[in-house]
Length: 355
Image 1 (cartoon, helix red, strand yellow):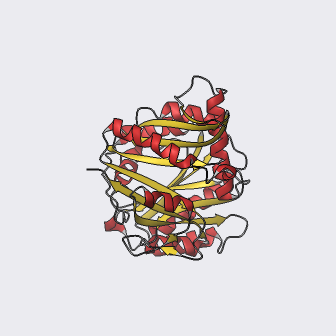
Image 2: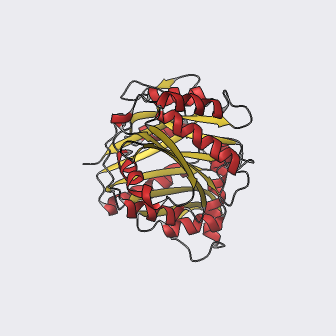
Image 3: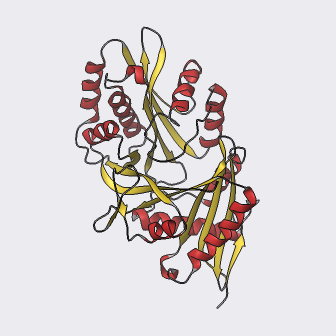
């Protein structure tokens, strides 16, 4: 048997054999993690998004082949716009081919790519089932991941430290803990007359662009980061438009914001997205943030509940939402739990400093 790795450049066509192999393995990863096709994307949609992202992300993709069968992949992603010194790594091996050194082979190929880029730190985010037995704690001491997970063991073997744990929570539209309309009414009452909520799907209305950009910029530094080294990402109205131009062809994008009536400022934001090409696609929670000077008025609940209602009405076939929160972000976890989100997976944020 012959085992080899092959570089996969971004192809010209979605039916490129290597691209189809890569997408098949990505779907296999998603099915294994979610027990269903909730994160699947069509090869055409995935290629179009990758093409639209080249100004912000440089990627090196490698496939492992065993006798011409694609059995794993490794990816190095670099945010060349905001954090060009950090590399984000992912290695996946199909279940039937684990334990044969394929992961190490892909990791070795990624190490070569990392050296060629001259990076100063590496990140690995590992999503996995909730821990039930032996636990590995992060440097923050909050949360835990399963110590016996193969990805965890591999990250540790390559010198990565677990710097933060995020809870992946799920919300089922069919069985919410509370009616989101009741949650919205309660939050509106608590917020008072100084605040109003505005929702929309698609491009951001022009008068709200600057306010949305300011909140997007705060997302890099306001949420807890544990022991991770993070950098601030500059945002302005033009960048919000660029994000929408990149994502909207392939994703439905819903937002809810809270406006401060006395000043007209956008002071809270919640975002939800869904893959257009997947009729069984799950909804993903993107940013949720409230400006510090406006916290304590239930604006997180206000915007999240309003967006839940908007998505339920716009996409009645949607099954569930997944959201990610640092385990030390107790306030946002409280909001999610009050709405009916429950622990579904866990994500470990690993980092390795190179210089």
